[in-house]
Length: 292
Image (cartoon, rainbow, N blue to C red):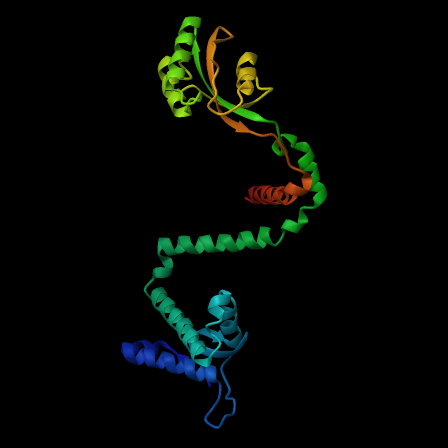
């Protein structure tokens, strides 16, 4: 048996309206008359309708599809007849409210139109790109070509991080070392303490804002004089510092080690899936740009 909800329903009071909606859910879902025989129902292109709201029909297929789209946790709630009645009642309420909103012209509201466009675009992207290009379309051979072409990303040499005080005169560098020793504990200087000294003592104006921090660099770096690179790598532990002024370039340096990074090599098998995902995203982005 099917109950039709027309505009006449809206003329009832709120209590009557809810009673009618609940009654429709009960009759539609039970699908049986008092004698236990299955009754006929309104037909739609998708099969028999369990509820109608004006010209909108909720069919058995629609109803089951709505339930199937819920999360497994929520689906488990709708196994009993009572729960299914509740679910259908919510679907009917949704359509009734949507019709009322449309009647009042909210379907033309700019915010609603914008939201609708966003949903349409999401559907367009899914159909045009998600279904056309799949992750499994990126083969191992293509990933290997990328891996071989980007050795620096998967093979890193050892790196060290250091901070420095630079002076033009050797005596100033010696004085700086004395101040570092005074602040050191157990022969090691805290990086923050060294940074405070570097900010005050270094004569490299560009390094002052960074408090003498040279960041990470490897043994082949050309960012700093060769002597500075070698002295930084020669320091054994974080907190160690050069105890004599180091002549390099056009001045003298006092250096402390503030960080260490060990060399590493990642095999193709280790990063294959990572590369596959990256190539998939790149191809999808390129396809979207070309499409637009």
